[in-house]
Image 1 (cartoon, rainbow, N blue to C red):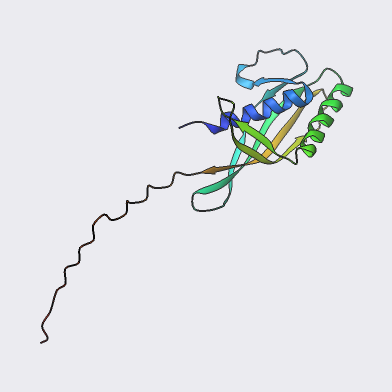
Image 2 (cartoon, rainbow, N blue to C red; image 1 turned 45 degrees about the vertical axis):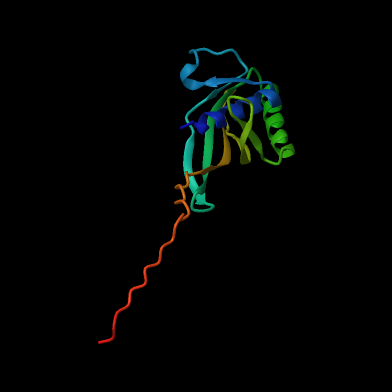
Length: 155
């Protein structure tokens, strides 16, 4: 089974790079010191939100990260670029597979920046992802129908 969660994070990092020019890496792969500006991604929070049908459901996801900026003006510029671009996209980001084919969309995407005393700002990207369970295979249609009448005499 393919791991679509990885594709979601790739879609977010691709969007961040294209919109604000920010490089990013996974927290587990980050060296102790990083060149600024950069984003370090942390573990996401996932929760089941609702069922659309018996086989389709929606997950709410909050992907955590930390933005390391060089100065306050650059930090404000990155924040504005990301938030304004999401407004232009109507909160939708495309998800691609390894071949570059669009396999889905992240909906209701929002970015929230926390307060920080330093230029290492925690933030989160929240979105909805729709997934489906495998449907059971329908039984094949009947190829032959035989009727055997039975007569029960009265009494």
